[in-house]
Length: 73
Image 1 (tube, rainbow, N blue to C red):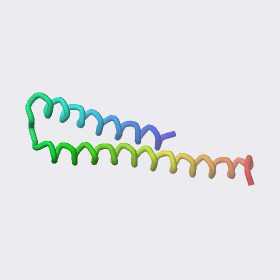
Image 2: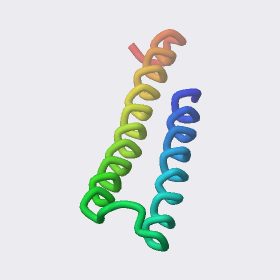
Image 3: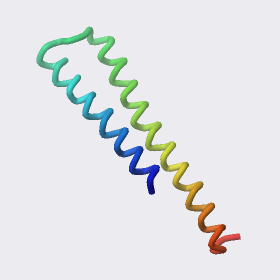
């Protein structure tokens, strides 16, 4: 489905940016560790919530399509 593809792209972008930040933090200490932990938690929440929203949207669309095709009542 299109929703899952969009969610995958968004998650991949967030993870890529976070991985660059992680490497920079480990090698260069770009920010304080307390702010880095906050950014880590924020990235995790964004990736998980994007996936959950995409799954819910996909289920709603599939159920609507099955009802339209008279597979379920």
